[in-house]
Length: 323
Image (cartoon, rainbow, N blue to C red; front, side):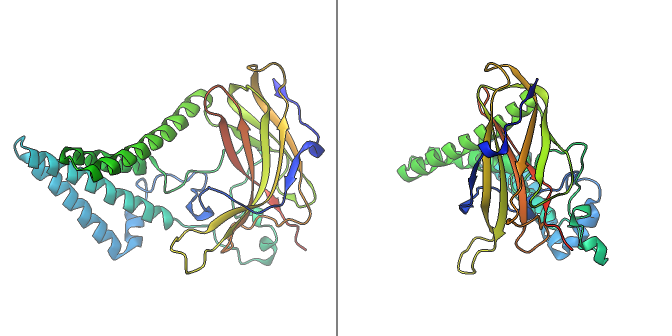
């Protein structure tokens, strides 16, 4: 069953600058990017230079400590050595994964003057057939979650100390671990229930002042319990001043238009395709993914369902027309 597309004037527009809790552009994996531990691993390690030798040495130390504990008897110190060796190995492996991901090759600007006028042909693998939501954050992989939970499990040995300070610290740490597990289970449940929704753009690119039109398709029927919310937002990243310790840029939405798509029938009826249309304002900037302070557009879809809502964000092909 298709959902009807409401007229654009029913949307709510905001030009207020709002901080977003999303990863910066440099941390997002491009579509089709495989694991850094897959094909081409040795080439990527050579690209790290001397740092690769440090990583390999630290991994060897973790393995050695684990084998030392494994080779011993069942006494407590040997068990602790095994646990420390395993956790240390996971942490180093995770650090190596993040380092390799951040050194992935990014598309460069073409030298041809004509090609520079059409950035949508080389800055991102756009497609009018179908496109998946934004890629994963290199800092939130499954290996990262496993490493964090392993550290928490090791720290829980401090319950045996009987110290009040450790009781308070471990309670807060375990609550954080439960929240991480909840996020992981929520993502897994949504993946099993609905798989990954895709967007089908009517036209690529869409210039400022024109209409962005398309459809969101769900591989499995989604039974919406209320109106679906669609948000088109313009995102701008700003480098933080040197006085701030964070190495990550600040990510802000500088324009947002939101409207709700009414249910095609009664609550709980299947929703397989969702059509949409947005009028892109003329005075907003176009996509510039390779700038030092990237600017880009996202279409965010939020479907209220039984349990955690289904939410997906798609990069939108909105550009400024050049000469």
